[in-house]
Image (tube, rainbow, N blue to C red; front, top):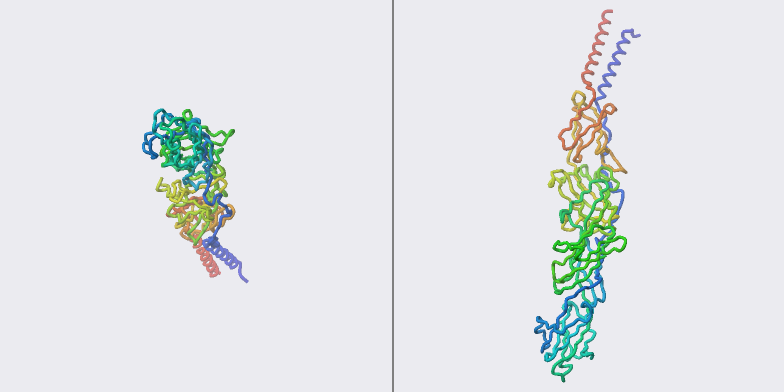
Length: 566
């Protein structure tokens, strides 16, 4: 049987040994399994482009009236050539149709679709009827009469009839009538060889279909810094902004040379969505409403723009621009952090991809908006691997994704996506009703390095940390629908934790010790070593283990001493 003193000794020794074991084991952390496995995450929604080929309506242009048309010329001489045509003889030359030509209407309006922001060449076909009279005057022996319409150099006209003093001329008789160099030529002496001096009235009536060209025809949204237009930056989950458009065309062509005054009627696409109309010429001079009729859009009466213009059809300055503005709303769908909806590992351990679901939710239905930008300040430009659009992957044309280095402009690290600068192949755009998935693939070459300190600024072993990014658990997949956080990390005996393959930026660190929450702290991958100063009590475990071990040996010695005294 053990004596009472022996029992006391063994009980005391067992207690001290257990305490030593517990204290020793508390500094050896058990590391949880890391969930950072390769996860290939696809966007949770699939969207289709509205216009695959990039075509969009450009409306139509027509003519409602002609107020004036340059007169033709008439020549009377002794031969059937055009000698002397530069010196027209207009004595007795009258137009019998009013003012001076009869406008018979439009045979073909200018109507088309435009390939993105490229220019078109269209035409308007107008039908004109002209009737002219020439009175031969006394003792004029010239018998060859030439008449050339101002439009004759452009299209062939259709002559209806020629009469002389009420007698109709046979147009099939080439000795009497011919068409030479687009001029009607009547030989009086062949028609009346018995008359020495022509007399009476010669009347010619004809119709002509004239194709009025429209050059540089386009509907365009000016880029940033053009005509005072400011860049459009998407700065919120929902951005409402004004966009300015110019509807331009140049009537006439360089090969034509005559003057005319007419009234255009322009049916703009989605005109009910536009406001603040104005008009300028090619040279930038404003066409004032009180000098040139210009009817602004009235949503209660029509959907057209009407204006009158005097133009020389071979002038390069007769280019008209109808200027107006509208507004669009762009939204980032399924937003999780900032503007993006997903961020995940993509390849290996150090390549991630960030997904933006960008949607144009309001605006003119058939007109795309462009020249807007998103500043992504949490991915350095040099970390960018690629930027892609789901629309391009689906075969949609002219959805060019461009980017620029923010630091080159203002010293701030980051990427400007959908840059307002137009790429050589086009510019990125969205139609109302479209949602595109933009993906930025980027590298993560940094590490998040921490040293956990206790309340007397001494590195502490066994502290547990959890990592958050913008108050969301950081992990291999981050999104509203799926989130795979990385496992908790524990500090080594020097208090340090190093997490490799981390993105650029700031993180939030939650610290726990012995299962208890200690506090929340900030850290960044741009800092070489982040020192985390906590309120964890200073607990010198090694000293305590040594103390309890010493006490155990003292107790053994005391027991032996007591035994020897017996």
